[in-house]
Length: 374
Image (cartoon, rainbow, N blue to C red):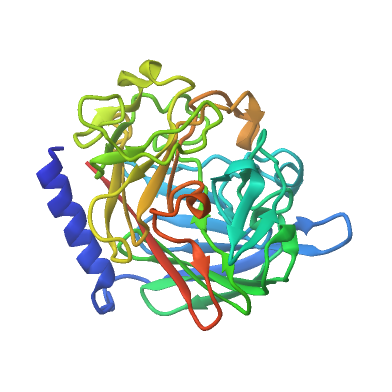
């Protein structure tokens, strides 16, 4: 699909997501069912919620990590398939999950050397990714049990997760109250909204971390998927995947996805594969198109819009034989992540959009995943 066509198509989708919701009287309402998904070693129960719309999409989320366990979407022939990697039971999420489907925070992505300065004070975080801090530390939001409340309202329904991250958790300052809401509607849109406030200055950078394979989880490589990223610039990173502070043009490089391009077409030209941050065109803070993903085999397409300034594209380079659902084994490049967020290591890059949240302010972010076929 040409860039101009994509921009128009996704812009129309964004306008639809932003407009006043209208009911769809010819379709059944979205439903939500709750059940047990096991318990932690200390007996803390973990619940799952199954949200089903009237046109063939069903998602499963659980209170551990606010994790999206499964997302079933029809292909061009109407056959439903699960398009996110994950596990069938709770235990692997506790012991070996590479952040499958979770909420990542307080700070998603990397902070160099686990260190940042805030209002003249230096804070040292866990270094759980080589020399760097990753996805909130040793026990980030992905490893916490959230409170949950389900809701339905005609042609949409979902689950609202909330928790208090206490002052000092993973060495972050401030009591941070966070709410993350998953809403599925009958237009095959999954809307993820984030809201947070604090009593002390702190960092907040939240995202959703599903590994997508539009051909179906367990179907093999995503290298034939076609990707479009609406970004003229990206942020180069060093050998440890920390951003250098530059913003470089993508034109004429393997990082140019302004026209739909097979992921495998130029991945060999990128040392280690894609695990980089793109600066999305347009004004951040406004819901606007970020990306489109298309699988030629199934005909499934995924449009992503967000209020975030950037999107991290990770091609599953570190998947190394993870035993997943249905005895499927996930190897390198068997899933990919598209994560709207602020840029990695933003606290140490003064010229980039800030991730500081102060008392009296509200953190708000929204991402819309829209599924279709062609």
